[in-house]
Length: 224
Ligand SMILES: [Zn+2]
Image (cartoon, rainbow, N blue to C red; front, side, top):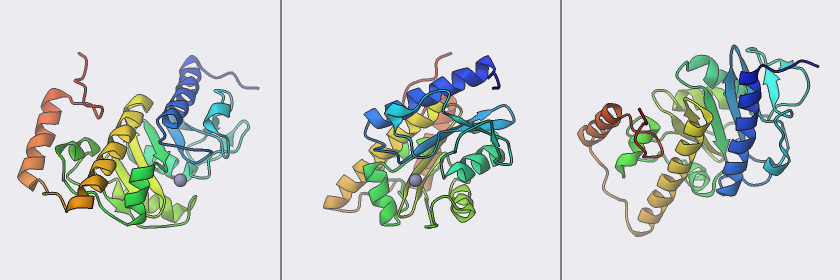
């Protein structure tokens, strides 16, 4: 039995808290959805088919950079996109995937969320892209997700759900809450009419302001 380092133990505990929070906020139900975090040159992923309330810190699955399981456990079927996102994006240290109601509704319609609200910029650009459909757990899905996440911190997955990323788990969970809220607002607006879209210049101004003020995805100011 290997002994995890203090850092790894902290990450494992944070993953349990994140999964419970996603469940409590109705962003995940049952065994859908999963989280992954960078752990040195390796990654930790939630196990396959375990509901959030039954997750334990010890039950998180440690993977080598090539995806091989280190120790015991069966990782989430979506471990490939967790591995690939963490490998190709040094700025990302945590990945959250959910089938939340409003994001998934838009994803099932194949909708790219336009700049109808300035907070779209929290996801890294002027749109939240929707990756084309591919079977869950496949390399094809991971490739589509990676392309949709180019210069972005979040994307939808067609006929499936959404992915958010962050510099840590709290950051990725906060963005997940924000994107779900934006998807709900866009869905509501479209019951009346297509909302006016902000221009590229207006979105560029927001992104510049976010940089200047160190804005977090949760809308709070960065603490010094
Ligand atoms: Zn999924």
